[in-house]
Length: 266
View 1 (cartoon, rainbow, N blue to C red):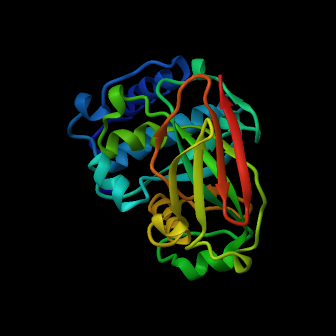
View 2 (cartoon, rainbow, N blue to C red):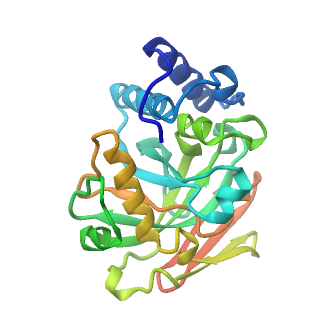
């Protein structure tokens, strides 16, 4: 990714307001690259980090990180060439079995994921799967509710990065497990909406191994001089396809050996 800026600080601030207002006011927007076609990946991440800074300044806590577009199929589906990351703010968290308010979102979709929680810091470049396995405290099931603010869910990679990689809500629950007790690569997942199976998958859908996703996150953050601190909750990306949900839907996602997660969209 280009590590240079084409946009000024004022333009970064303008796009940060544009993207965050879309999230907070549930308003669809057009791609940021339509406004600034010359912008670089560095600019896009600067927008994301500026919105993150503003949330923290207003008293929100950052409670984790997420990787997006981590399956080859998803990258092809969205027409992007590599994964991206985003942060998770405290108000994104929904309790297991809880309700997700459709009025707070635009066009949500759900993905089943495996989350890693670290016990040691990870700082790129040069982080590999072995480093991640050694630094992992436990894994836990998670469901991500993605909600791109872009009209018709159409975006390019720079635009999705600026929009915090479509982050909106997440649910975690089920059972935690130590990595050595689970074959995370072959771990099966079944997603049901209103009692009907709508998607299935296995851990290997995430870059061949979910730990590869954490390694990539550490290396991408390392490009900015940032690290993943010990104790970080990291959602590694969708095992299943992203499935559209509607008001009134009840979801139940079952994870092999790790229990299930339920929620209702109201």
